Length: 456
Image 1: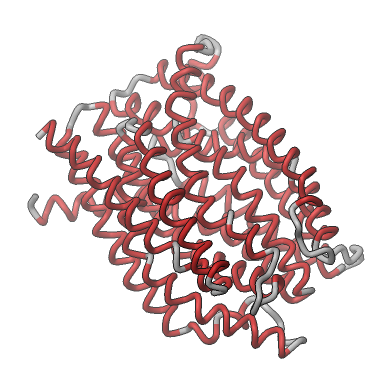
Image 2: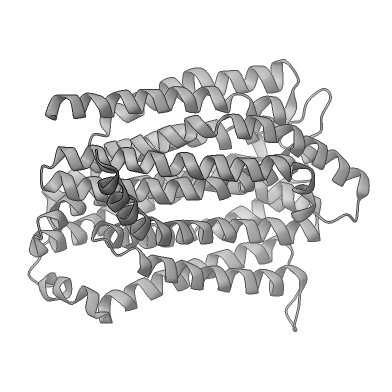
């Protein structure tokens, strides 16, 4: 492909990807705001929030993956400019999203009941339970938000979500400060205050999505079709057929990260649970920050690919995916270089020095975890790009199989071996990630290349 076309493709991906990245960073900053402020308030609350956030992230990504089915469905219709069909797909997908959200909330309620039987640190358990139960109902709200986001992304409107998330993030940061520390007349609620700040910010974002769709001229043509567009059981079935494989694939991938918190929560021979969980939480926040750049570009790839797929333009599908990988690779080199150079100063950004000994233990653990974090970036970049390219063409059923091989067969067992059996703690557990992500990236790329070779 000519360099001039690459430049055009880079420009298109940046136009879509920058607002997505900013929005995704805003979502990470919501969790990071909890981490930063709770770390200043109490190391125990930080550890408890880290454990619960890892569990609830499982539910959030399950819903996010399901809602992402709208991208190949609506995106391909948008490529053909079929307004009525898009509106039918939107109404049907939103209903499917909310039903799936109810199921996820019920599932997570069951997990909440199991917390006392997980062998967790007794001093952390009450904090975890309070934080969990406050956040639980907001998972359904997030399903509505993610459903609207997927629709807007599909029609190439990524800026609206960016602004909505930034407003929600600002709300979350302000009320974190007010409720965690008890400022300006509010009671000091600690970890409970962080949960209430996050929950109410999600309600605010959903309200803005609804009002924006109802009154923004950008969506006038879809509102005009709304009454005549009937919910289609066939479209709901299609949403389920695409959405569940994506959701389960993401859950398997997340299990390699959040599942290890169950192991960390019990502690080890030479390391304690609080230090390990706190270090894990800090490093996860850092890794999530980098990944949001990957995800922004990857989502842009999925949108572009779905639009080209609706036009049956396979050369453009290939070009979009490859251009996206070039961009992710460049981001990975820059970001991990900065993290490696700043590794000794990272922990102090999240945790106060009120307990110098605890801070020193956590900081040393975080520094040791930076190396596996750097090593897995290549594999993470490949898998992020090409899994989104496959989603853009609706090829999702094989993804679950590949993810199970990469994470269930390789990454998680290696994490257990390095972290628990060999007593490597949080750092040992993180050394399982480079292997799983690299295998996943290879399998996704080979699957995508098979499609390209077949059609070109």
